Length: 313
Image 1 (cartoon, helix red, strand yellow):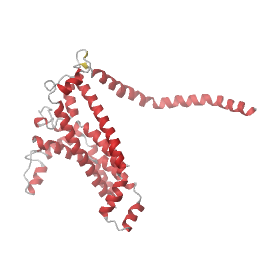
Image 2 (cartoon, one colour; image 1 turned 90 degrees about the horizontal axis):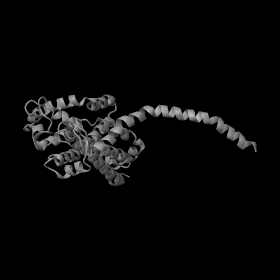
Image 3 (spheres, helix red, strand yellow; image 1 turned 45 degrees about the vertical axis):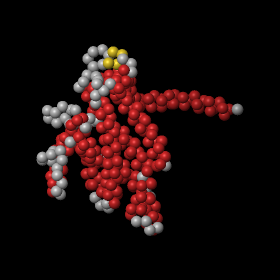
Image 4 (cartoon, rainbow, N blue to C red; image 1 turned 60 degrees about the vertical axis):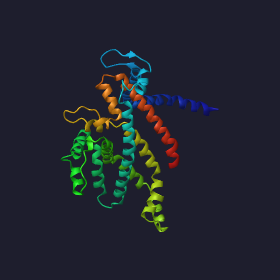
């Protein structure tokens, strides 16, 4: 009969301790919670509200309902380059993501095969990721220069005529995608971690069974890397659909206005959004564009989880 009483007393004695733990826990997460509310949640909700208004950052916002969304999709006079920016972004994504993943996988395989000095090569291949985008843009503008660029100089050595990479509409997106593949250090590190996680016994068993290097890669390595590849595919598509800094730097040289290159061939969606917000005084339309992009990314990600993940399972 005394056991429940003792247990109850123990629970009562531990209640202040639990409250103290709760207070400490809330204090620990308070900075992250404040950051989330002030810098993420509140701006997002504000942008959602302003997407239903006509606002230019100076005057009061006028409520227009869904007019911004309707005009973006239908009014080519008011928003002449909206669909062009969608087309450019999709083309960039379709080229940049496979090229980046392929380059990252090749780099990871080479580093994984190196017995000595792998840390040095890993560092060198990761440096483009931590390099400032302003420096990256300046370097690649010089590399793509039609007269003095290193790329055309190398091509001419092999008898291939040089190209005006950033001023030829058909070459702008491949040129930007190549820069993205050059900055594949994060994907390379993740692929390398996936390769390190493959048990050596499986590779040895395949070798004993007579599988050559290509067969081991196709039948053993790639199936084991499917979860890693799926993760990088999802995150890579999301990043490509939001490309901005690189395009802005590449096409904002000295004295040049940012229009996305010749014939708007490099007018990425987020760059177009930026121009509406801070160049054309159409913050309401820019906010609407941001939520259109959000919904599109959610749809694309859901489709990837539905179809691509089933194949990877």
